Amino acid sequence: MLYSLLFSLRDTYGALNVFRYITFRAVIAALMALLLSFLIGPRLIERLTARQIGQQIRPDGPQGHLSKAGTPTMGGTMILFSLILATVLLADLTNPYIWIVVLVTLGFGAVGFADDYKKLSVGNFRGVPGKVRLLLEFAIGLVAGVFLFLTPDFDTRLYLPFFKDISVDLGPAYIPFAALVIVGAANAVNLTDGLDGLAIGPVMTTAFTYGVFAYAAGNLKYAEYLQIPYVAGAGELAIFTAALLCAGLGFLWFNTYPAMMFMGDVGALPLGAALGIVAVLTKHEIVLLVAGGVFVAETMSVILQVASFKLTRKRIFRMAPLHHHFELLGWPEPKIIVRFWIVSIICALVALSTLKLR
Ligand code: 57M
Image 1 (tube, helix red, strand yellow):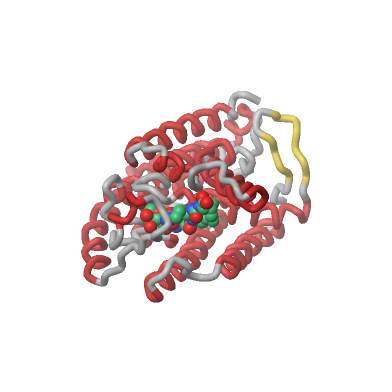
Image 2: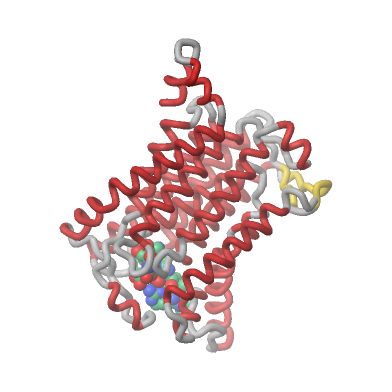
């Protein structure tokens, strides 16, 4: 919105010509999201505390978490507000990809909000029944998949990282595949969000990685040079990922250990879904498993733990997801968090290397 207004004035004020550059608008969107988070954060914490919108702690979890009871939650509302406002103001709203990422993100935010609200209003951990939540999430993902499939010349091929000449055309099967990527990413972030700052760190490193992918994929010269699929218009997604990165950085100011605020499902679900839909739009779906390696490890730990317990009545980990296992090993919470961030940075570097190693 601001982009189209200011850019249209470039003949009168030549300096506004700078708004044509995606990199410039990405930096402005990032700074705007960060500033909004700093402005909103303290007031949101006051409001959540006053309304006693505080976290309920499960009694069967690590004992160290009991002291977290009452921590204001649903801080994800601040992340979404900063992210969406900065994107709508700085991105080119004639680009359909911007509308897809914004609507998918808000859709998952609504599901997460309903879950948080139900937990808080009823005062238990169950929230919206898991099956209903997954149904709603897949419905949003499938609508996004159908819309993309019906978009003229949308590429339904699946490309593998490191192999430039291998691709598989999924055809209509791309629709459920895209939904799976979005829903899987959303729930992986949700599972990971179990320690102060643990989820938002990898969300930021993955957002940065996909900002680079989007910028390269949307630039014909770079796409040809790097031999990655050219996706006309994907460059605008770099503005969304830049706003996502810094909306997360602003939230981390309040979520860092010891957390003053949790993001809630209203934050975790849309953040994961946002990464999933950007991975789909930039044609870098598989490499999300690399960039989001921490999310994959956390999710796999749950799958393996539940499968093992059901089959053998024995646990592989002291507790799943993985971060609880290290807690029960006696690692202090900050140590677990920072080490997971380090692993996430390594995953981002390996994912970025796929741009050249192919
Ligand atoms: C998402 N939510 C946190 C907070 C955050 C199948 C099973 C693995 C499901 C899983 C589960 O319930 N996952 C839900 C994880 C919760 O955080 C809230 O949820 C939002 C994100 N969705 O924003 O509002 C707790 O995490 C802690 N936390 C922080 N700092 C943060 O910045 O300390 C969160 C954010 C908060 C707070 O304590 O209350 C969560 O863990 O529930 N279940 C589990 O993760 C449970 N694991 C488990 O049951 N393992 C079993 C089997 C089933 C795999 C096993 O190992 O045998 C553990 N989680 C908890 N207690 N809290 C263990 C029991």
